Length: 209
Image 1 (cartoon, one colour):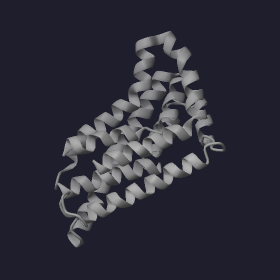
Image 2: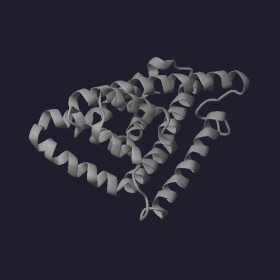
Image 3: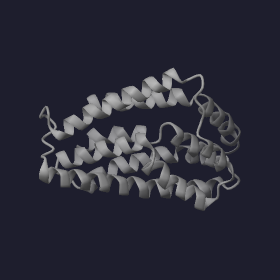
């Protein structure tokens, strides 16, 4: 079951999440700020998965989530609804690709300190619609398999590893990474619709398979 939910971590840091991650590496104190951001992500992802699992466990006492193989089970219905929402989101991003702009709050992260980065790490997981959908899917899977939070630790760990990639690149490649990060940040800002559509498509494939 861990292998089924593990790939969902790929979509947790897609979209504005990865842009925020890259921006924090270009701040004046990139290591401290990025570590604070990662701590926020870890706490939010753990709390979010625990909360969604608890919700589906409580719902399962009223309406059985069913097994993953049962068509029409509550878990399967949720997956169908999520696929529909993701398709709609991908279409919306494509239609509005010429006018889409990155969220204004991303620009404020250039001057962020550790405290602001920590709060951003928490809120960017708990309030981002795509991450909420991922955590709902993980929570439903845990409930269907009657698995505890421990089963989701590989998923949470991989989410944290993906979130740490900009910092790891910065630490490994030093000056070259510092020069490349601003260009990567600008590309992600101008092509955010591409990243969002790719995240939606990846999520759809992972749900259907």
